[in-house]
Image (cartoon, rainbow, N blue to C red; front, side):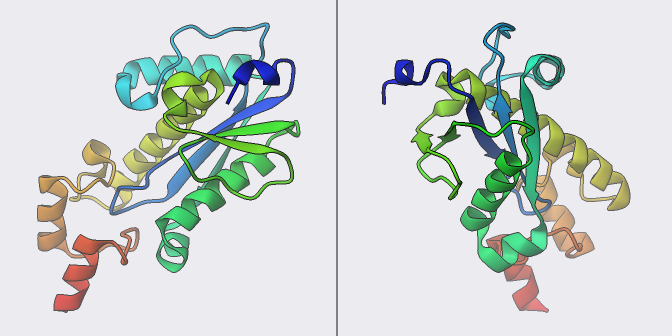
Length: 196
């Protein structure tokens, strides 16, 4: 795809965070950057430190033409499956933008149905600035939420692993059992449920 064709359009970059965790929502962001206010250092959120992500998130929220978050809750993830829930979160993020995009660029190879042209970009979070920005906003928002959930559901270590299936998280699940924010259709959680 030749991105030069899309110059001067309102282009929204979209990405999601939280497909792999055993707990918590999946969060997506949509961002339309302002060409007149460039942001240095945009990259895939996974390669940035937490401090750098926070700094960039502040700049994105300050300088973007518009941005929005969308989410799918644990119950939706269990009901729909994680792919469909991720696409729903992306759709909600795009629909929440204050400016309607003329084109949406989505990280990966799956995209939600939207009322405008949509293109997928493999590894777009590393190569398309608007998608990188969306990746950063989604990651910062979800990480912050998992830290809040850590205080509501103590003992699982959500502030450390953000719900991902680390050894510590799996051990906490065995000891404490399944919380209301755990995804019941995900393997390790489902196996515990099967033992009950």
